[in-house]
Length: 222
Image (cartoon, rainbow, N blue to C red; front, side, top):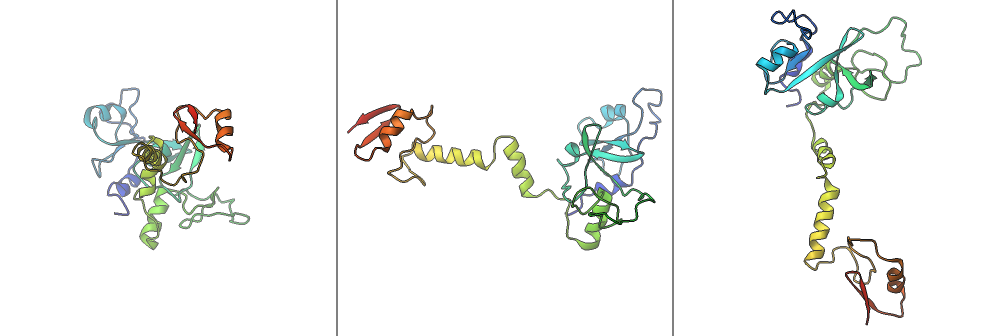
């Protein structure tokens, strides 16, 4: 599914009103949204603790009276490629919806603009917000919010389970069973030694007139 069912309700939700249940509390502004309770209203910090404890919840923030979400939160559940991001208060964020274009912006001298609303962009991207990307998907169908396999691979690499780790494990397994893999039989190389080969051992191995075998860390002339 190119568009998750909770996205449009999220983009249409009003945030930062005062929670009617906890209006006298310090953190009573409704800046939370639950992805599991599809179509629900925004709620405050205290409502999250009592009603959405085990749910998937994201926090909405504000920049110049416009709603934003941190990239670190939304990229785990949504493909955000093509959407312009900004660094605000040391955090990278993106806007939920289209913002009014400043009147002073005439479009002249602007290299990159949003495909939907025409707003100027900092980078060579397609959309200024999640809302504009949603319109682009409905209009052209050449974008998606679905996380691709490449994103899962990136997460594996971050956890130390990526392709490089699997290749090393495979080679280590092959060497333990006597398989040489891609290495030629005359290659004077140590495959994953506990410590780097000693320079003197490497020099003797490279001498063409003397055959030698490397057994562990001992060089035994033949």
